[in-house]
Image 1 (cartoon, rainbow, N blue to C red):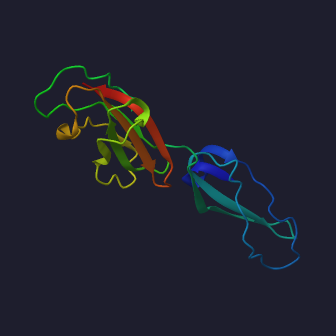
Image 2 (image 1 turned 180 degrees about the vertical axis):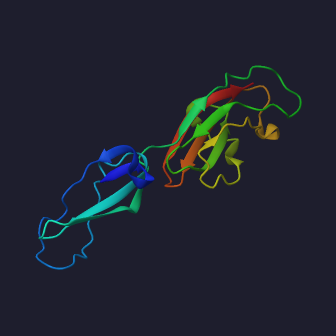
Image 3 (image 1 turned 120 degrees about the horizontal axis):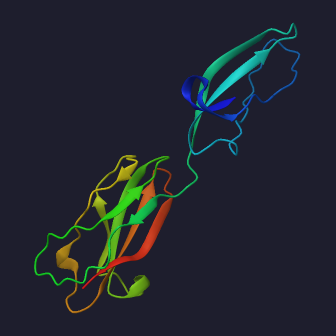
Length: 178
């Protein structure tokens, strides 16, 4: 039986399922896979129940858990293009990064002078935060390297995020800076 909370609480993910119907032995020590397809995103707690030939049962809650993460991080663009001319650093930009399953490890930006990263970057992939260590969200506004921006052209900013399973999301030209 699989639940999304410890102690068979929360939502039932998968009800009791027979793994082996009869071994005719006094013990069973083979490995068996939980139903990964039925498991939901996040932590799934697996409990076991045993029957003997006399019809007696025993159950143990939370024998192990399965952490499932099959989705990529999410990047939310809260930032319009930045058309205001600047002569000094200090502007911060508003994008949110989330991975509610395994958590974020790296979020980065890159700057190019052509859309869709059509030319070599003027600022290659740069960490926005050095190490997120599995943090579920990064919601703080952040600056970029003002000295890397080219004058007199549009600077296109692309961002990407990685989770603890190295799954990635990239959003090209998420905003621009004049």
